[in-house]
Picture 1: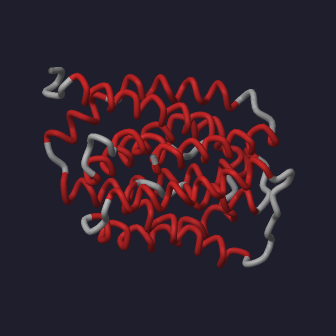
Picture 2: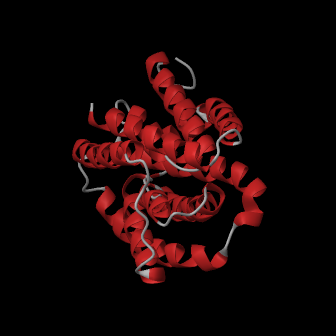
Picture 3: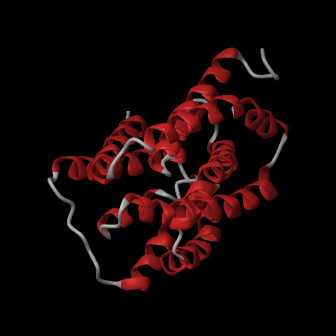
Length: 244
């Protein structure tokens, strides 16, 4: 026992934090999907959502500062407005959500899009819908963020369809993820923060920071094409871990 946690539980927590940290450090998203795909095998959905949002705020904040000059408020604010509206709905649904059904649904979606993005020589781009469409994607992301900390999945995919370069895309969806995680975390803490949640958060900090650092080093070595390919592979892996 370490910090009141069994060794096998601690191993699951560390593995999820490390995998999620590498994924988010390298891509700017997918921490929630990558980590919870492992954590949900041992941790209940509410505590998993607490961990995803709390760790997500921390790790995304550490990698956002070097990208601050890429942030364009005009592109970011529609996503934020939509996400803020969606978060309360997701939090309300959290206590009624079947973890297995949620994992399977998100996993199938990620597998389908990841395969398309990897196999297609070039993603189709959409310029229509403007800020209304961006806000709609942000709204759906907010719902997923409230349910389980998955707020970044849809905005990340949407920025690829918009055809934005990797720095511009990451400077939209990563600040969005931080805000959504912070709002969801506040709601989850209000409802369910307990000693077990605090202990688990403390336990995962070392592998979380290590994974984030590794991922950030990998990000700097990717051009736009390789970045999109890496995102596609990451989506496929995340989808498989959720479905299997």
